[in-house]
Length: 398
Image (cartoon, rainbow, N blue to C red):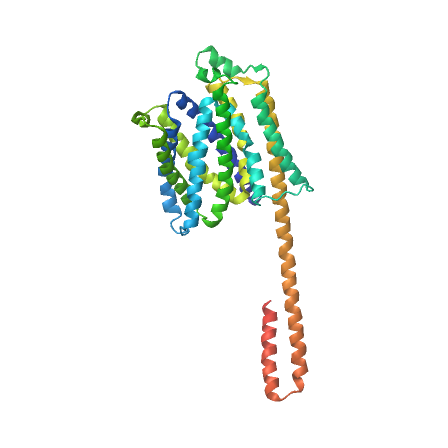
């Protein structure tokens, strides 16, 4: 049982991040349908994080009421910036890019996230790169290969891949992605969509870095998630009032728009922010961001099945490269974790032996001093006797 318990404990971060990618993939498909139906992405961001705040706040209030750190101006400023990076900049630009392009393309472009996060982590000295070590070479090469795969999906289409499920959906007329297919890849909207996704990804990478720093000073992940979502909701409301001047955009009913807001808020904001924070706290920001390429592969399959998106050979080849790069980065992180465990295991015995050696030398010197004092008067002999006995008790205690 102990062996299985250790294995499950080590596998938790992997299971958590893979599960999050499925959640993000579902959000991309559902959101694309909602945006196609005319919902404003500014309003969607507001409702999304309002749902997130309401869903996770009770857990934060109850579970962390005794361990919640004191709020300081420094921490509040970091939370304000985190809310600006995530709910406002990242989400609005990503939704705009998703609307102008498509879910598979947007996910493919966002796979520059591991490269951005890795570079930023090195700049802020959260990651050390020693190219003489194989594990560092694996992380650098894996990041480059991942980006190359994403770029292949974007720039090289190749022949159309015939999928059994997509042919079945198209034959029955259930395709819902006609607006995406009509977009001209060389058009202005396609270029703007690509640029918006890149800006969103840069904000997302910055969020990873700052969140890792904030958790060191405010070690209450649930409370931090709640505050980010709440502050982000307020910021998004201000942005929406500035960008949308029609009161009708706030109208929402029991339809796909409500499902998109609720799903995105509960699954990919509240739960995802919390789980992502825990994984970052345990493994670091690069490990967490290295799983993002999986979302693109999942979206490509779901988009082909649900939205009748077309899958081309370039997408398949790019996906293969992304998986190769992903496992290269993870292998490098795994070897790094192993080296840290071995170093910690070696430091403890050495430190203990040094401590024992110092104590033994001191005791030996005291015993010599006590023996040299035997020829003194009786009161000095009594005093030395008490000292020796106390030293002997200390030695015995060790």
